[in-house]
Image (tube, rainbow, N blue to C red; front, side, top):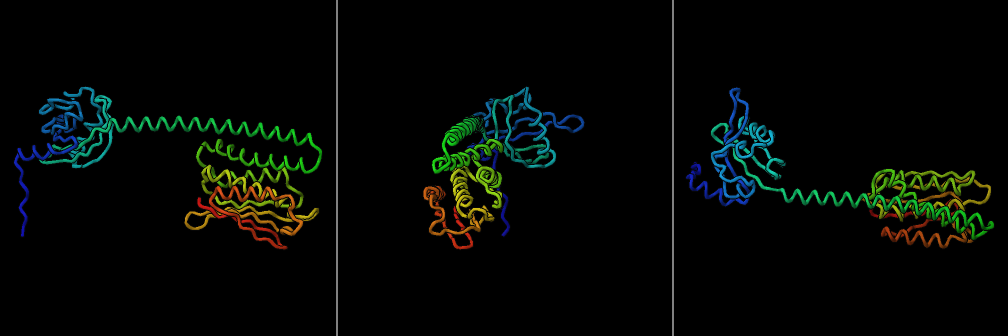
Length: 333
């Protein structure tokens, strides 16, 4: 059965568009002698049109008559729609009207006419701009805080170094050295944040490589190689801080306790991406393993590793034997 097209009377059309929550109007394009759009005339509109544009009594009048300073964008855009049959959805500000609009415009018959359905989104844009400004200010303040923290950590590290130099060789001096390396691990994060221009995340490779390099230069031993195999992923600061401290503790233990004096060996620090967004950190050495006398003073370090891993929602797994020791931590990124 053939369906008859729906026919609406002008009164019914007025009733229909009056029910719309959005502004609505039909217009006809005005062109010059060469057929170029120069203005457009308002033909019909609903009550919301006046409320959303602030233009009253617009029926039969032109856009430039109602808004003499109207931006060319509107005439050019509606000209393409009316004369070239190009429907378009867009958001645009009109400084001349002091408003921002979300617009859908489409050509209608006869040729040269078009219909506009629009909404005044000025308040929404204002709120978005205020939110963006507040976010930018908060990021600037946080960046300044990161910088101050980094400077404070540098000062603390210098004080610890002074205390260490004032002590004789022995357990106290070594303890201060371990404390200083932990401070360095946190300071490295803030340096990488400042260098990258980010305040929320850091590249794992840049960050962990620097920690490993710092450990190699401060407590490295001749004949013991350190290799970093770090997958480049973005780490939030929530993850980066405990992860860096775990690396610091595990590499420190390997360098100091896994190898007998005069021996050679290797320590490997790896960060791998697993399935479902999980990450795996592993620190391996080919030293003597965890024998009864090995790493006798590493109890605090092991406690710290467990505590930092808990912050990642994980627990460390250790495998050790005569061929060396591997500590693995798996966690969600």
